[in-house]
Amino acid sequence: MRILAHRGAPDRNGVENTVPAVAACLCAGADGVEVDLRLSADGVLVVCHDPDLLRLTGSPLPVASTSWNDLRAAADARGVPLARVEWMLAAMAGRPVVLEVKAPPPGPGSVQRTAIAVVERLTVLQAAGLPLDVTVSSFAPVVVAAVRAKLPAQLGIRTALLGRPTVRAAAVLRDALAAGHDEIHPHVGALLAEPGCVAAAHSCGVAVTAWTVNRSRALRRLASLGVDTVITDVPAKAQAVAASTVSREAASA
Image (spheres, helix red, strand yellow):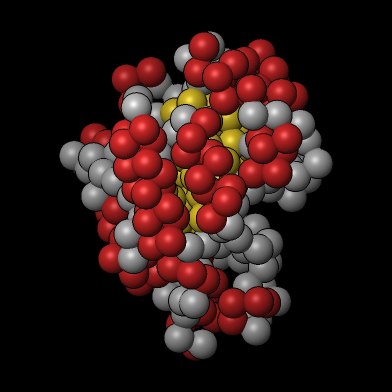
């Protein structure tokens, strides 16, 4: 079971979604990271969870309507190392990354612009020789569908449908299969309520990633179910629990 650090922050003690946070989470035992993407006004894919910089920097600048230079200046003024997606992927150097693409503000062509930016950036990075182990996900089906429609098959980039806590895991699987996605990312509570979805997904060739999994009991249960990946705020703990679960199952076999 692979362990991905949620927003790239080990135990959520560092500033999230930054290159230093990614480096720290790898040292803390994560196999990879999950980070969030938003498109700036001038077409830069910014690694940022919120629609604005208020929580990170105290500045209410909206990512979607602000240029990269202005976003970076506001972040620098507060000592926050705001990152572009290419910097994050370079720091990961081929380790597993989930890029959660946030839905853009409503507007003509906004979804297509976001999808084009994601695919173009990944294409350029791979052409430059950067190894990529990337899954593109989103809570917005229209966003991840637009990305998938534009992805060249030779890129080898996977797509996944995210499920909110109130959405059944079986519904996420149904919709992902209908759209041709490679993975499902249901909420941990939804997946534990329908554990048979793990085997059902695997029988269809679909990988399963659960989010956000922090409790030892849930980690053990998901490991025993054969979940492929968990996204967690506590990567060191998750690695230890996963390893002990595998050891116990091997001993009892």
